[in-house]
Structure formats: structure tokens, C-alpha cells
Length: 296
Image (cartoon, rainbow, N blue to C red; front, side, top):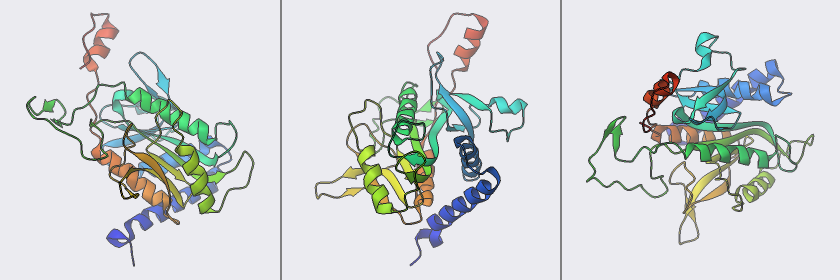
């Protein structure tokens, strides 16, 4: 039997794999940079028009930065430095204001389960967690916001549905790896059951003070997504966001469909996210040396 919408997920997964394979023939993917650029170009084809993608850092108003991989941002909120260059030049790393960031992706051509290199899962989890902490600093967009600058009255109490955040601009982070291996220079792991167990054990670690990611794609057949446990012992996927309380990350197998499932998960999150306004008055007054005002 075909999957929903005439194998929509299957078609996304296969198109994604074909695009990466075509780019790999040209780039080689010997280094992380080539894979990041190829992943940027591939994801960009899938994004709704209001979003754009670049490589770089998430930055707050006082200059604190986090992350150094792929950023999905709202196009009309932030014109990247590439507007004076070639818009397809993804080698240049941007500094994207946290207010304009919709999602952050740690890109790994091969995710390592052991070791402390930049390709290790521990490094990826740390990078994603620091970005999420930075996004949590931005002014919240309340659930009662109808559109930017227009809110329902104070008398309207809005409560999130089960598994959903209490604001419209949560930080969404993901780790996308084309392959998984045990350690540096090791062979890629082909057994999806082994990946499921290993990735799930590491993603479930709760001792870290950093928040976990919302999505992990670990090769072509494995994903890690937030689930809500139920009293019967089972769990369900209620939203694409990993909340601080009440949920857990589940390591799941999707034979050959992980990229399709993961990209649908990303699109689901982007469909919900409503970012706030850039603090243009504060930026202008700071540049002109005028007295500062409260964040808008």
C-alpha cells in the first residue's frame, strides 16, 4: 500500500537522496564544508518562499553567538550580507539575528558515536543546545498573536495543545547526518537497529544542562523525534517540538525514508513558527548614539 498522498514522504526521501548523490559526485564530500553547502542547496529547494537558508552563526543583540552550520531564517526579516555578492555564495558565513532565525541544523556527513571530534554526536548535541538557549532569550511571541503587531485582547487566555510550546517562536534545532559510524575513520554503520539503539541512548541523556534537539536524522533509515508518553505505556507524536517538560525523544526506524520523514518534520515546525519583529528602532538608535528604548 502506498503512503499518504501517493507516497509523498517516499518521493521527498528519494529526491533528497538523488540531490545529495548528484552533488557528492561534484564535491566529493571529503570535508564537512562540502556537505554543509550541498545540504543548504538541497534544503533550499524544499523551503516555503518566506524562508531562506545560509551557513553561519545565530547572534543576539549583544553579540553572543552560537552554532556554525545551517540556519533557516525568515527572508523578509533579515537581508544577508550576500545581497551585495552572489546570492548563491554559501561559502560566506553569516551572522543571523536571533529574532530572524526559524531553525538551526547541525550538518554531519558522518556522525560519530564515539570520540570528541567536531563530527561526534556529543559536539552536535552541544551546538544545537547552545543555539536553542540563545533563541530562548528572544522576546516571546504569544499564542494570542493574530499577526505581527496584532494580538487578541488581554482577556483572551490561550493555552497550548498537548505537546506544543507556549509561544509561537520557539527555537527549533536539528541534526542531519547522511551516515553514522562508531568512531573517526571507521566504517559507516549499515544496521539500522544498531543505529536506533545507539542514537536513542545518547539522545535520551538528561544530565546535560543544554536542551536537546527537536530532530535527528541519522542516515537514511533512522530518526529521533519528540514523543508524548501515555499511561498505557505507548507514546504519540503530537508536535515537532521537544518541550522542556512532558515529552521525550524517541529513536525510531523508517526504512529508507528517514530524510523524507525528517524533512516533513522540519516543514511541520516551520508551518507553526511565527517570528516576532526585528528591533529596528533599537538598532538605529544604537548606531546614532541616541538613548536606548525597550525591545520592540
